[in-house]
Image (tube, rainbow, N blue to C red; front, side, top):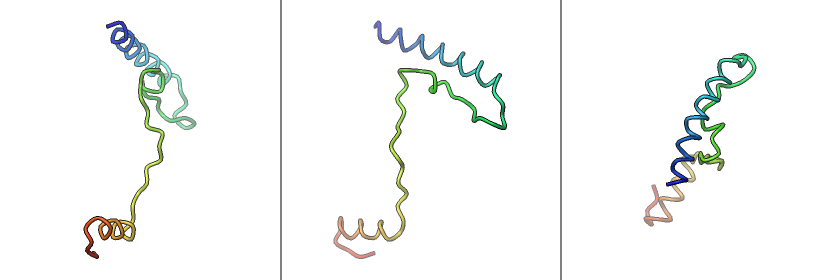
Amino acid sequence: MAEGLGRERWAHTSLLCALIANANRDPKRTRPLKPSDFDPYSIRDRRERVVADEESLAMLKEALTGRKG
């Protein structure tokens, strides 16, 4: 329960931090900040997302199904 209370408090605090930071930022120089940028409990996926092309999808299909396609 203590961790849940901490998460709830950080969610509230990070929302206020993002609001204040976005109100005082220069829109031409920086991106809008999200509450998750301030929340130590937020889980961010930092892995690169790989976009598959048609050739790699065809190789995957052939490997999994045995059919060319």
